[in-house]
Length: 305
Image (cartoon, rainbow, N blue to C red):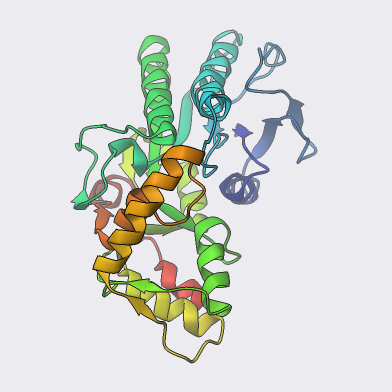
């Protein structure tokens, strides 16, 4: 099969590219060439280079994430990249002489807009209010509408924290803080969070392209914050106990952080949203993927044991 992949230079996109090239001819689309078969294009601008191409299906792994917006322009970037970028890609695909049969879109569990919950499934209403989650929810809506109108099969994968053998983002930051002795546990660390392995997601893309639908993906284990800390401490060779902070003290600090961040943008590391992520359980059910996609993920923690 011929597959078009956006975001191939990214953390997850690069792993999807490596997986798909095992059995398919993959063409990448982006500003910087990352493969021999590459279409140079910017999703924030009009795409004109797909008119003479032909693909069996498309995987959209491009998007803006993680960066905390502090200005109006940075807020607008999420709309420009995650929503308008998807719409430009869909418009370019619609102009092709032969349209792809399927479109796989990488999304996030943040579209649910929940700060707490246990085993939330795909029927949970989309209620995101943060700029990233809201932009991904709007992108999902655009993709579904386009699929309904054109007859293209649509698959949407909603991902929690994605972890790989070479961690980045929040996991890398946590590892570094634990190794340097700069990490403090808040409360008892009982809150559970969902995670998923990047290589497991990459291996599922080809299968979901042939099925369609919307699916949460997790490793099915949902470790507690304390358990994650313990595993990561062992991974970096830390033998001393991780210090803890009473929840009441953390709440007081977070209140101060709220005031500081209201004045200067989210620069203070501990505010109420950050505290909620560390102390409230938030897990998602992957039962639908197990039933319909034969999804059998491996535990994330095994990467560090």
